[in-house]
Image 1 (spheres, rainbow, N blue to C red):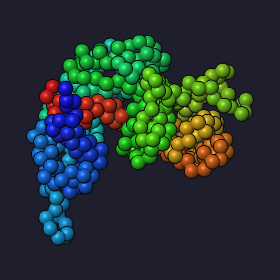
Image 2: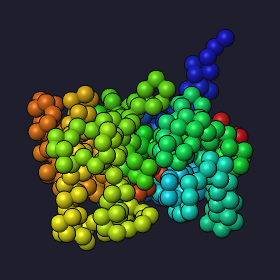
Image 3: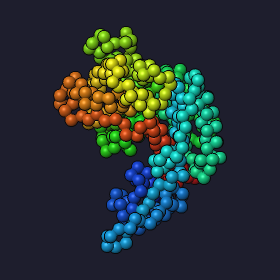
Image 4: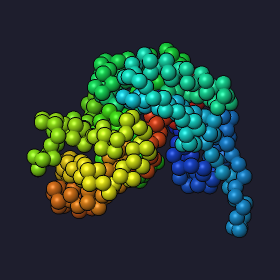
Amino acid sequence: MTDRADTFDGVRRRNLSRILGLVHREGPQSRAKLTAATGLNRSTVAALVTELVGLGLVDERAPDPTNRVGRPSPVVAARPDVLTIAVNPEVDAVTIAAVGLDQRVAVRERVETDGLVTPEATAQLVAATLARWRRRELAAARVFAVGLAVPGLVRASDGLVRVAPHLRWADAPLRALVEDAVGLPALVGNDAGLGATAEHLFGAGRGVDDLVYLNGGASGIGGGLIVHGRPVGGADGYAGEFGQNRPGIDASADRRVPGGVLEDEVSRARLLEIVGLGPADEPTLAAALAEAADRPAVAAELARQRRILATALANAVNVLNPSVIVLGGFLATIAEHGLGALREAIAAQAMPAAAEAVEVRVAALGEDRLLIGAAEAAFAALLADPIAATAR
């Protein structure tokens, strides 16, 4: 029996995937650029683009006027009304967004919670929010799937949330709950791992093949790894849990929790407390720290957390030899208040050869990074086989 991938239909589907992936990840592309990028001939690219237009996934528009000789090539762009729903449940809020195939966040809501949200309540909240959006903001949109970025260990094989300690979830069948509530396919992943993918494809790690990403959120610290241009999840999908490592702390006065792990010492809750805030989103915390940065207690806490973070990152440099470290969430805020000092502290503790070229960058996608990562996971089936995904 012939594998479909080797048939004409299989080749066509693969080429449709290539074209759609290019306009999704690189933005609007002329037919000429698509021809050059794929190595296909012009007539084949024209036929593939026409098919994607017919599937309702891309639009063609007239090129911008130029002074070049000859007729400019039409521009192909992903349709903004082709969407997935991205969800990030946290200890103090659930953030939900609709993210377009053109990478734009069409609508976004942060729903603050009085207590810890349950998996069942999360699924019902997503269903209710999507139903409301479909009556208004997304009335003309096509929604293909739901992606969920969860602060915990997510089994790669089936999306089971094995444990999300800060949410107090254990063996939660979140994917099944959401699919039943919403009626769409759902994908579940670790929030930091999805954030790493987002920053690698679209943000501070774009074009970088070897990077370490650390995310700091209300539920602690998680991480993601990109090695040789590919995300690394480990045997079951649990790789990157930097926050659960025992931190190296040189000065005993810097320790706050005897026997604690990294996220006990480098802590968003401590930063909120030092500036007198309750639950708050990332921009609010960052603004409060910037305003209070000259206060001795605030400066001292930022410096303490930066010292401990530097040791953890130096260990990552020694083990993984990345070219870039990307920091998101409150870790980005810590870094921005002393990026040069953080870089120097990492270099002082890592092997010189491994540290000499490493860069430290803050996440470029801001507070949307986890949502964009979740959306990318939800778009995977559509990008892999546009015909099959649109036939559902």
